[in-house]
Length: 169
Image (cartoon, rainbow, N blue to C red; front, side, top):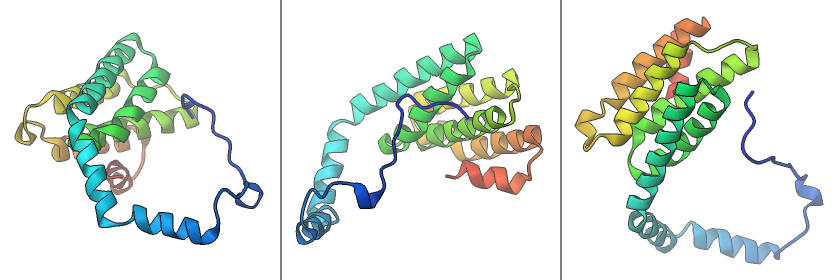
C-alpha cells in the first residue's frame, strides 16, 4: 500500500482529553448541521472555486510528470489529492477517474505487482482531459470512468461489477 504524505496516529476515544462539555459539543454539532452554516460553507467554496480548480490542475500537472517518470508512488499521491478535491469544484469526472487510478495502484501495491504503464497513462490522460475540459459535455466522465474500471477489473482479474462499484466511491 502507498504511504500518504503525513503519518496518522489513531487515539482511542476514551483516552482523548475532554475539550468541551457534552452540552457545548451538542450545541456545536447542531450549529454545524444548520442551514446557515451550510450556506456560509457553500459561499466560501464558491468564492475560492477558481483557486481550488487551479490547485486541481497543479495536481494534474504533477500527476502527468509522475506518470511519465514511472513514479507510481508519486502518481498515487497526486491522484489521491485529485480524487479528494476535484468533486468539490465540480470536476466530478476527474475525481472519479482519479479514484479508479488510486484503487488500481493500491491493489497492485498490496499484491506486490507492477502496474501496466498503458493503464496508468489511460487514466492520467482521462483525468487531464476531464479537469481541463471547459464544460461537462466534453468531459464524458461517467462513460470513461466505467470503461477504465472495466479495464482495471480485467487487469486485476476482479469481477467487473466490483470494480465498477469501486469507481463510484
